[in-house]
Amino acid sequence: MTNLEKYTQIFTETFGISAEVAASLEYQQIQEWDSVGHMSMIATLENVFEIMLDTDDIIDFSSFEKGKEILKKYDVEV
Amino acid sequence: MVEPYALDKQAKQAFLSNKLIELTKNHYVRCVEYQKILNTLQIDVDKLTSHYDIPFLPVRMFKEYDLLSIEKEAIFKKLTSSGTTGQQVSKIYLDKESAANQSKTLTKIVSSYIGTRRLPMIILDTSTILKDRANFSARGAGILGFSIFARDKIFALDEDMNLDIDGLKSFLEKYRGEDILLFGFTFMIWNHFCQLLKEDDYGIDLSKGIMIHGGGWKKLAEKAVSAEAFKKELQEVCKINRVHDYYGMVEQTGTVYMECDQGHLHASIFSDVITRRAKDFSVADIGEKGLIEVVSVLPTSYPGHALLTEDEGIILGEDDCPCGRLGKYFKITGRIQNAEIRGCSDSYASKFK
Image (cartoon, rainbow over all chains, first blue to last red; front, side, top):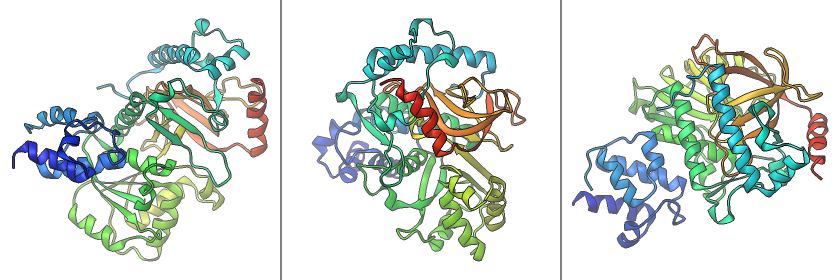
């Protein structure tokens, strides 16, 4: 599985949405991606890619696209 | 990164006055109710020179009115204070920017005490508190806010508020030898954790633990449990040495006042405390008990940057705490009596009618 597939799957499984919806998703756009959903998505992401995000990056993680940028800092190319 | 305790009195006064006067001007333009209040008080926002002169709103104003400085469409989150049934709760409206700034500021402040590494975290509460995701209490919001410091977390209490000893033990086993963050509310920690471990310690060893607790001492004061007794008891039942109380309120979420290892609550550069004499609201001296006013640079979406609380406290000093942090340090002595609350804030509020 490519990193993009893994990354997308985290969104589709955590929030119960399709890959198409995930690709343009923003924080709080759907009910499932609220602050509780956010922490659980981050936890899954950290497990899948074996990284630990800084607190500031957790706060800045505001969309599917923004998340890709943040992951670059941790040497994860999506 | 901005150091949260790096400014001395003079530098902080300049920084805060500048920011808070700017905020006052913005709220004056954007919030009609706030404008009315300032007009009634005959405040000329262009003539303010110090944040000590900015009118402070009693916190109960946020219970009685919807005060916001943003368009309704920009509301991203609504925070409410905890309140017993029948009591009115404060309603605080945030846009995306102010919500993010709250989290960022909380992170900066707390990092000064626990470091920047995220830690395994034990939440001394029940996970059911987060079940109703659309509607958090202040307790749920506090837990969520602090969860950002967790890299793995468990809730130590089940839905019936019983301590999950087995879960706790296996979590501690998993992270043996590492620093562990514990978070909870003072009264709940006392009732559902401390008292239980007093009967049987179950071999729980938290000598690597760092506990952060808040929510106030009112209920424990009724049981005559002091802050010293609380710490001593915790030390005895689970060997924990690092215990930090914090003071803060939902109306100024993010700018919390953390207790240092000297037992003092500290104001960061993002906020400040001012004690005022109840008789005329003049500024009390260091060492003199007064009503607590809190100012914070974070409230951009609602006019809550200068608030008079219903707490009393004493400023213990400024820039000279042995822990090395600059800024004011203080202690809370209690809540003002009901009659006095009605007395001072009612008379204050009645001016606006």
